[in-house]
Image (cartoon, rainbow, N blue to C red; front, side, top):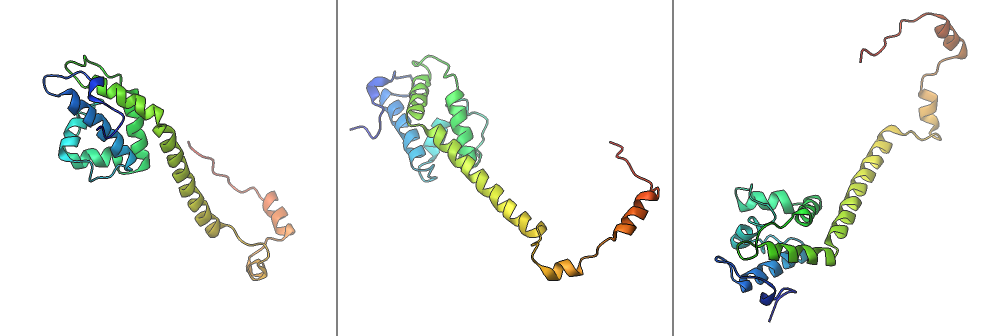
Length: 175
């Protein structure tokens, strides 16, 4: 019984991978995404297989690969975008291109990209709102605060007019 949407008869066996192994890998990728990218699923064997798909050949170890692609929702979004844009080159008799295409189709069908775009946007908004609150608390003053208004220095209208009449040197920006 299959543990996912992919069945072995959908894939072409290669010299190094059976159709069953290809189906299991495709199902494992989807299970990994559904598990919210659980590190326990990201085993050494899974890493080796995934690092050979979708153009992921530049990472030197499993920890670096995981940290690069799965540490945050923003990283996961980049992974999904990269995966969906990969052209899946090669003949299925010699590569995993048939599994890559099937994974892409299932990712689109399950709407993972939109989910992570929304999560990333919500996280950015939340960070920005926290920054806004912090800056407003620091720089905004309450108008009804009489004590602060009374103790603040003020410039009389006569002093302002005198300053305007006096030619004060103005430094312009050099850039």
